[in-house]
Image (tube, rainbow, N blue to C red; front, side, top):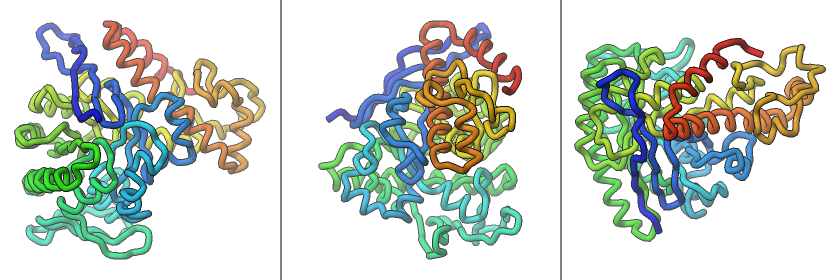
Length: 409
């Protein structure tokens, strides 16, 4: 049985002379197989990429899938997944898996946000940010987070130790330490306090992870990634990377509040501080244009729900931009969904037919559009990886972005 490992294969040369090369290609080894990096990891929140068979995800080129500890803890229960042999076997996915810690969902769903986070603490003056017309369902303290389920309002508590227990039961190849997520709206004072809390939680996660690894020695080894926070502050991001970089983590997630305009800068700060021989995962980033600054700044893997969510809402990714298949002009358009795409959907189905499915609210629409959009982003990152290794990355980047930003269909 193979263990976890990471090997850098090729370093991307920077455009500026004398600049430090950070972007790289590599391979992550896990008990369930290898991941060639850079790679996009599709999100199967509840042990399923919504509307798509795991076999279809494999066919379109996905190397690994990410499931959510919060959602699987609530339903069907981490113990059920454990009894089934772990999340990979449970969902019939013959490949590597990730689980996040549950912290993002505990906090974001708990305060009415999806991509923007807020929280409250009883130990300091409140930095109270909450979504409009929402009630606070999550409360954080130095020991953990108490929250109400978004499903039935039942009360639950996540601590670093409990998150590790849940994720060990889920059995993913790669899991993340429990961290506190902040928003750009939080004060500098709160960011500093939160960063220290996340550092202490990281130590507790490592201790519990080591204990559970010994207790569950008959199970495949699960790698543990620490999560780097610090919002938009360079000193906090670098401090977090140095602090967690000295800990016994197998890799790192780059998370928390960041503005996409500063994505490259923040990822570079972190990459310059972290150990070079361990993988870096950029959490929650998956729009086509975002992969380029991400890989150039040192991210090895990415995950995001954007591609599948867009598909379920009729949005289609193409090399010439994003378009909405519900528009009336596609009603009698009997050509492939995207002319230059080689995915299963585009090889077999037309714009007219998928327009009809979406307008008719047929479930097949979500399946076909998700297959296409997931193929598009998985294949894009594969192409980025191949061009990095062949020395043609910057030419590919210029060509892709000029077409993608040129016009929508």
